[in-house]
Image (cartoon, rainbow, N blue to C red; front, side):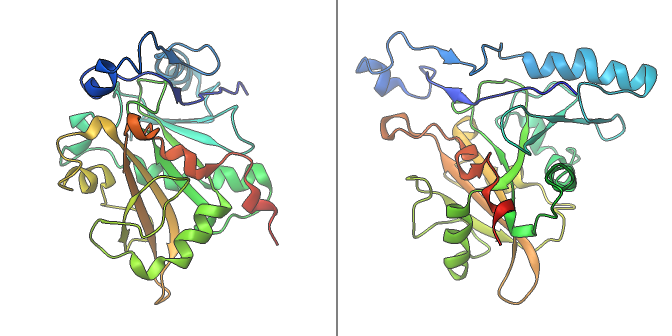
Length: 265
């Protein structure tokens, strides 16, 4: 299996989003780093040129783990992380800012990503609990690949503990968390759903006033949880990139690529 490292290390910002910073000269001469020297369309070419044709012609999606031609997505093992996988649409979709993701009949990419978490357990040879698993999409300023991809990985122990400790403060409407996560202020809401079926987190985020006109700057993280009443669901976390505050809008920062929770008692 070919493994791909997609390190989301954006070190530059477009003029349209951070004009103030540019005018101050803070971002002069900066560029996008792709971590492994990969071009920003690397994921697209892997899926479109290799995984999909392989699945269509021989039933072998290598280097992807799987390709679902009906629902339109591929799953790829990322080189970064002991058990991190990426879910990538087979259609060309730039990222979280794409209006295609808000359409009424948009594919349920988040549900498919949640279902793919079993690959992590198989890789680790340990069944991960619901609240040990997380999904993330970075903002346009916190990613290096211009093809939508959902990170599927373990949640960091610190984030998991903080969310469980403040679970009662998370309601069904978006509101700022009372504590910072990895030094950044995230907004949170809860969803009562077993598997994200018929739930579109992209649309739920776009309906929030602070995000609706600036989706490029948004990052979205989903964490599995069991609520106080015993019902299973999810916590949705959102953050807005703010270059002046050192925030790239990279929800991937809440994931743990070493998957320390898998080694916990």
